[in-house]
Length: 435
Image (tube, rainbow, N blue to C red):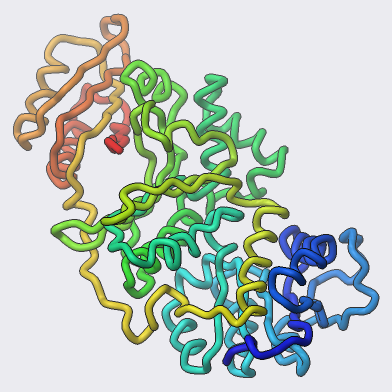
């Protein structure tokens, strides 16, 4: 279905009037003339759905039809597009999107969880009906990374995408580095400032970034969305002392999502990384997101911007609406859903690279020899070894870095080290990425 021949308004129904939903309506109102010029027709809000009718959202909704049930909103007879801003991979969000497609409505969504779990099936359903699913707002907020990969780099074979995909984690890690405070303290501040949710686990445990990475992987490599194959680790175990050692070793610590073609298949992983201070992504701090794509003709391209918030996310939603109003259409993930090529997922054990390891050990003779022997037995070569100060008979931190080795060998070595009586805490490991 194409709206390119139409000159009347594009009529939209918005499900969800939280921060982003209200931002979309404000942007459409404030930029009405500009949007009209850019898409050749007006965009008109005909219906909305939200939990509370009485809440002051800073916009006049008196002329808009109101639905208490977002699923019923999806069947609004006058809507050309349903904008889903509810969130969640199941329940009302999924039902709203599915019904909208069944009723012949285009869909625009900011829902990364929905797409990470059901994106391939929804894309197939939309494309079979000649409908568009716009989801620029689902990944990296206001950064046009979906259009950048899907359209801007359409002439390239992409070999790698990596980036900072969660602003909450990037803010916490930045504050830990710049203030010397520990994780729990900075997290509490982030919650007070509204950067972290009351229950921050989706962010700090890496799940939010993993949802986004699964979507980026599909767009970058033309594969079905495969969230279950994403290796996910969060930032709870990153300590203030790790930032001191990282600085001394010439690194910054970032939570990254990495998707890469390898000889073993496509790897998808989210975890804390040490990256060289000179790497462009090392300089991206605070709540900002960044994505770097590697193409065979374009080389490396860097996208940086605000990854969340009312304005940036609304900007991405409206960009998708303008595409639909113009009749611009492209398959959801860059190639038709039926042509997405199944790819072998590369197991985490196949990752090859260098590692940072922090140990708390009892300071007594022979301990370091035991650690070195565990590494040697797995053919892991140590590059640097740091121990600051002595405290005979007491626990002290010991840090080492390795030369490139296989993840499987590293994990076996760490398991042996953890079992040593002289090692008083589980070893903490951060992978080093040489971007």
